[in-house]
Amino acid sequence: MPLFVFFTILAVFMVFQKAWGGFVVILLVVSFFIHLIITTVYTINKQMLLIKCSVLVRQQIAISSITHIKQTNSPWSSPALSLNRLEVRYLHSKVLISPANQKQFCQQMLMVNPAIVINIAGMLNKA
Image (cartoon, rainbow, N blue to C red; front, top):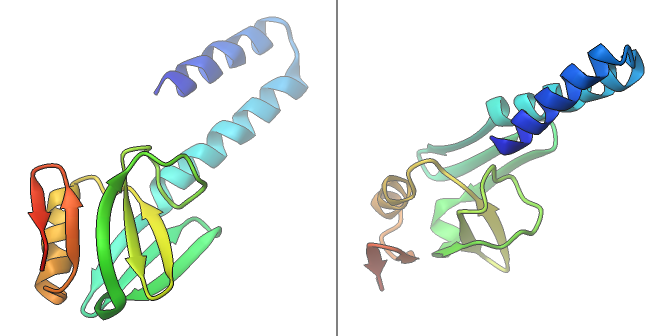
């Protein structure tokens, strides 16, 4: 949210200075961020976890291949909108995501694959 306040103030400044090129650049950057927020979705569809983030990421993971889910604050680039993330380990890989309700997400994952080891605050499952 503070980032949007910063861009809004900067955009207003650009308008007052009649710096239209800068205003257009800010408008494009803000539009891209809004697009990312709107199009980042995590869907549990039967046996698959579907991860979509704009046109940048479209990933399908078999829930049966997921071994661990744990909380992390890792800043690595990923299809996550927050630094309050979940690290989902599967096969020989991992992905960082940030579902709005982490406990509910983990419960839904456990309904499909009860063997997943969960390690998040307030919820510990050692399968």
